[in-house]
Image (cartoon, rainbow, N blue to C red):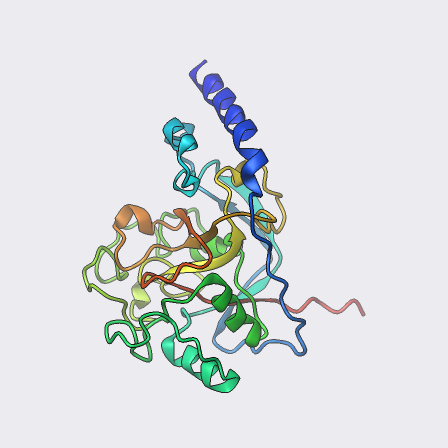
Length: 283
């Protein structure tokens, strides 16, 4: 009976929120790619199914959160559900300041990331921070790549097992990732080889949270398509994944979802790029 009541409550939530789900903002139209991306520095993620989301109870849904203006704080990770993705590539490391500086120099970009002059965050091998979602998207398009979808990001982090963290189920510690304000700033990308995922992707927990392609809608997992979910068509917030150098152990779990406005410039948010895998020839 209690479970039935929770399901009825969830349906009521959807009835209240769905009219506002696509509140504002349009998905950016990426420029046409003129040549295939270079897959150097990327890892191949094969086509197939994986379990996305948390197995936690529906009780994690806080009714009070429904009435908050900042609704992205609701953000449940349940229900866990099977997702099937096409094969893709994803960067092994978060985008570094050195890479972003090269992009600025080659394109004549004059708008620097916030914290560009802060020695705690501007070292060449640290991940670039202080960039908006659109700036991250533009960098990836310049590389003939794109931002990963939320589902792609989670598959790259989860690997081939239903684990809590990219490295497995062992609790976080200072040898696995940069978190909980131990270092008090970002660390060079790839500093924690023990914390990489099954696919060999670094820093998917801690260091910086990462922009992904999707708009955010708290209840999206309840009705997202099973194959290649793209996220909502419109929204107010963009999803960020992965936790960061300030987050505690709870918030660097690989299923943890957060979001912020796309124009935000934070010293805790960076990004990495993804790319479609070439399709097999039909010949």
